[in-house]
Image (cartoon, rainbow, N blue to C red; front, side):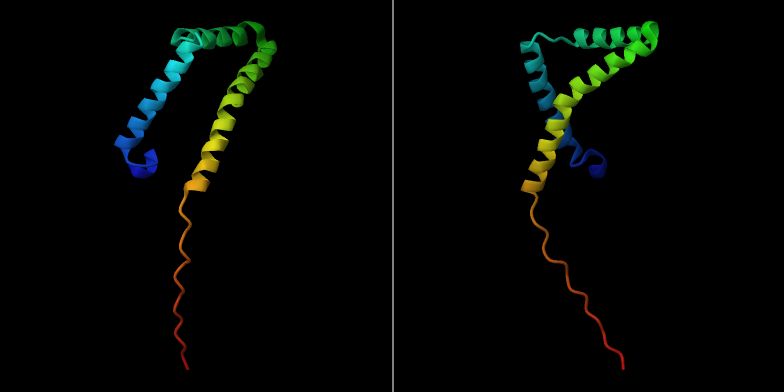
Length: 100
């Protein structure tokens, strides 16, 4: 289970709950509600269905809008992880036996 969650499941769930709460507060401050997100997804599906290939422009816009947030956060998380990892100790030397 630890490999799947990336740590102890209880700790990961607690972290996700805290992050979800903080993001919810920020989105609420910005005036975004869950219904806005769901309506946006519904409108996206409607546009794709009714507009055909012109809707790809909307898909690209949504992709870029999300990527502007997700990619920097992911990059910072990876750099932070690399900076906080403890350096590995030198690997144990293999003992070779000489045969005559």
